[in-house]
Image (cartoon, rainbow, N blue to C red; front, side):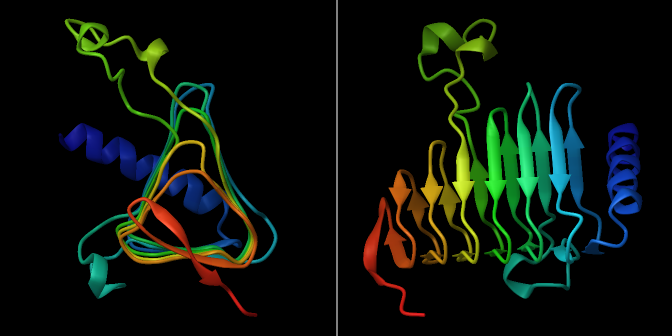
Length: 189
């Protein structure tokens, strides 16, 4: 456990140094890209990653976790603000500029394991894990504890209500909420 913590901390320091002028880290975030996978942050503007126990009282003691595995790619735009959320990719996750991701949000482009018991046991077949890219447009706001599932596309300026479960495509300038999320009204700018 101690070695894992040291490894993750050193990995975090690598990203902190690489993007020192473009990301303001508050606390220790878990950032890990497996070989053949990538995590990139915009080098234009400044983004914020809040991962400190006192940086957001809604997500008390919840770290930001950003993981790309099995060839996954995560691209995070400029002026993005994340607080105690998880991004996990084996396909592709793109977060547009000026997007805010609330505390406790999960953005996951895969099912983590096959749904069929026979394909999970006795040894998981990771090649059978279903996955599809996620695209989050510019200027979006994702409310606390929302879940963005594989294959989701959010247009520009989409607001996601807290606690929503989002799958599918949504146009620009709408407010969505619920489980499953649906359009509540247009987002008047």
